[in-house]
Length: 89
Image (cartoon, rainbow, N blue to C red; front, top):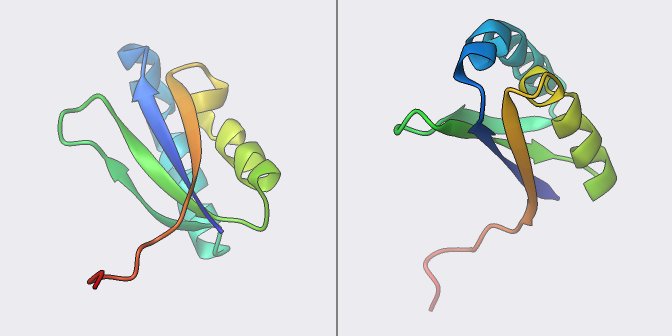
């Protein structure tokens, strides 16, 4: 199941400090097959990470361990997500 983590920046200075660790963390999870995609919002207010996990608990643990979340630089909003098969007819 896929889970989307919305990560809103609440402390821009702290975010800049921990961003390299965040990028390393999600890159490592991508190599493990736990992160499907990730990226910043173009308005500069945060970003999102899409996880592929066996349970919501696993996704929550991974998202909470993200350095930007653990440090308090970003808030976390996690949602289970199901992809539509398009086009819908």
